[in-house]
Length: 228
Image (cartoon, rainbow, N blue to C red; front, side, top):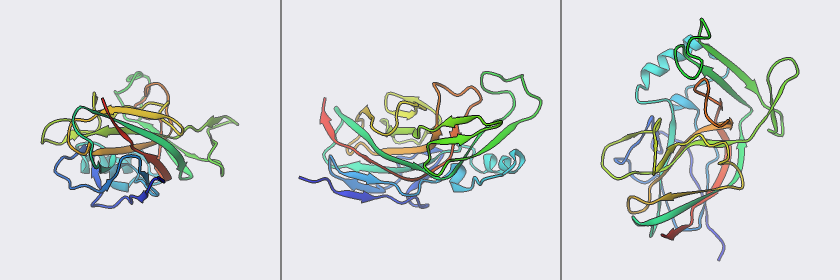
């Protein structure tokens, strides 16, 4: 039987800024094996990040969203998924918008004392989204992924999307891109899947706290659940 394709738009009702919020009603309810298309995931800080903003321009956004920058889309409920099951999330198609950024505040990351001023660099992507121009003819190949991918952990309190655990969370896995699968244990009925923090390219870790962050113009995944 063919999978049903659902479209999940990013709106104030479907995005939780900074946290995975168990108090949110389902943004979408699907069957195991259905496909979810997310045509316009938000940028950081409630979709207020814009191309060319200075680091100083972004500081008020950090204060406006003290729980974290990520615009988390969800939760997606999968009918029949129960604690003890394993959820397979397949990344089918990814399509970034045409820009992204890399930045870090002072005193963080692996080089906390190497710079006198905070840094932000903006990138434009090629038309086919295969690379980003850096400087002096240097091109960075793109490999879009979602930094945050999670089911809700047990409990009724919001969980910071900056964290990671057995439920997933802020994984920042460069391998989690088109054509791959992520397997997560289910902690709550319906699994309640969240995703956010779109990356155009992500390394193994973040030396200065970010990859090339941006949002996706379109993406699709499917979520079959299987018993453990």
